[in-house]
Length: 256
Image (cartoon, rainbow, N blue to C red; front, side, top):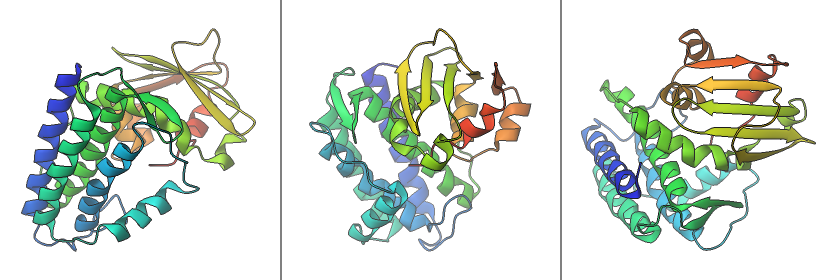
């Protein structure tokens, strides 16, 4: 996906999220996947573009708890009217896209991870799609995710997810992991000493190989479908010298 294509996907998804915010019967509506109200999800999304803009030119410290940082950010976005949040989201996303500019490969930061403008855009698209699903689910509306969207999301998430390692899992998950995104990229994760590193490409040797359908993998990673369903559908296939590591890899990262 080109940067123009990614920009269009982000803008279109922002519009879809805004439509669902405006359609809510109440901002206090509880959601099934997250411990927030519908209005709080809208406020969370509004908070993100400013966070990302602040990290474009220089790295920012990784919070001790990303979930706690998200809760803190909610206290700064006091608006809870869904329609007003929809309007603010449109403005904030447009400001982020302007700041990212048209150079997909421009070097930017996601906390302490050096990333690209397209990668950071992919992270924003992920947040819009996954939390857009939360709102659509509450409204009993369909929320399709396309393969190109999922690939763009994963190109944003997979290099950056190392900031969200669960150290308690990492100490028992040492090994080399190969993730092949079907029709797209390969990634190598190395877990050692409680830390995780990632690089693009296939490893010479891996303890566990994962072949993943991008849409299924994205939905599974964010809890929209279960890991068991993802495996039974063939959307995620695992094999290798240490296949039991698959369950540990599934728990290695906390949601951002």
